[in-house]
Amino acid sequence: MRSKTFLGITIGLVSIILLIGAFSAGFIFSQYMNTNSTSAVTMLPYFGQFGRIDQSEAGTPQDLEELFEPFWQAWDLVHEQYVDQPVDQESLMRGAIDGMLESLGDAHTTYMEPEQYEILTTHLEGEDEYEGIGAWVDTTGDYLEIISPMPGSPADMAGLKSGDKVLAIDGEDMTGIDGEVVRKQVLGPAGSSLQLTILRESEEPFDVIIIRESINVPSLESRMLENDIAYIHLFLFGDNSKEELRRSLEELFDQNAQGLVLDLRGNGGGYLQSAIDVASEFIADGIVMYEEFGDGERTTYEARKGGIATDIPMVVLINEGSASASEIVAGAIQDRGRGVLVGMKSFGKGSVQVPTTLTNQQGAVRITIARWLTPEGRTIHALGLEPDFVVEISEEDRLQGIDTQLDKAIEIIFSQ
Image 1 (cartoon, one colour):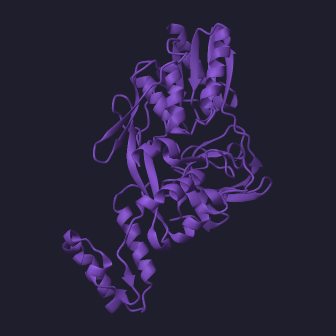
Image 2 (cartoon, rainbow, N blue to C red):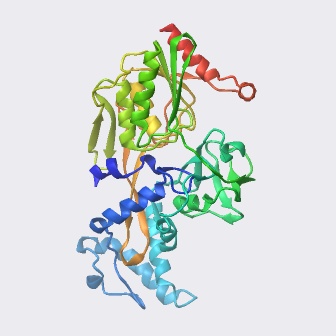
């Protein structure tokens, strides 16, 4: 299973709010569950029609019988004493699973009830792509969380910001609803509207109305700045990012680039494979990241040889919307001394969740199985990356189109 995280899972399960684009975690999620769940089905004790059946028949492991005695005692007491009989046995069972996962204290390890799971895994094909509000989101927390709106998108025009949480959609409370299910409810045809109730830090919840649009998501943009400084803004880590990045670098080097600014601001992530490929263009060899599992075992990912930008002076721009794959690349460049980071602390999304369908059509569980670490062993998840030079863009500068972070990056390259 561990090797399959590299090939089959989108980093951090970060999604673009599109109908079903290349980075829809719902699509990757369901594909992984459909192809891998057979060997990973979680078997649970069978609850009989009128209460608990004999433990030997239920399959409770013998070495756990003593541990589970209080659970079965509580189960029997509910059936014997609860005022409203008969109790809903499936609800009790699902509540037990939900409570077990919640006790781990990891917001990304969750239970999806069958109804939520059905919404997640149906109608994945035949939907019009690239129609939505245009934002990178984190689907694995208590609420759907905005990582970064795409520049010029409906989400951007509505004023959504990194860290905003979706409390309700069209007045319907999203509390306790799986993030992937919420994401799918945000999707819809271009021209249609929806109302999002947003929770923003230090503010009272407020409503925004957004008109969905068809969204075109470029992989990157590049240009030559003054004084022979190349600039590449990478928007996502996709299937074609490696080829597009290489092509852009070659074009900029043909223009005699003497320095490079890699802009990862607002980049919510993408594929792990793409992150390694991108980092390999700037790091000649050695470690890019570690994947660390619960038993302490680590998988090491190293740079692939052949990068064409391993010597040019460079600066990486990050902000609150730089997440997962962006943090892997930025962390590797920072730890390896390949370049410095400028901007604001990154989002902090660096864990792997693997979904498993449960038997008897009882939904699915999503379990955090690993975390990503930088080459120096720093944890990204929930902490983010601290830039070497903290530079904030004031609202006044933003309104005037002044990019103080890019200006600082250029200054640093000049000093080198």
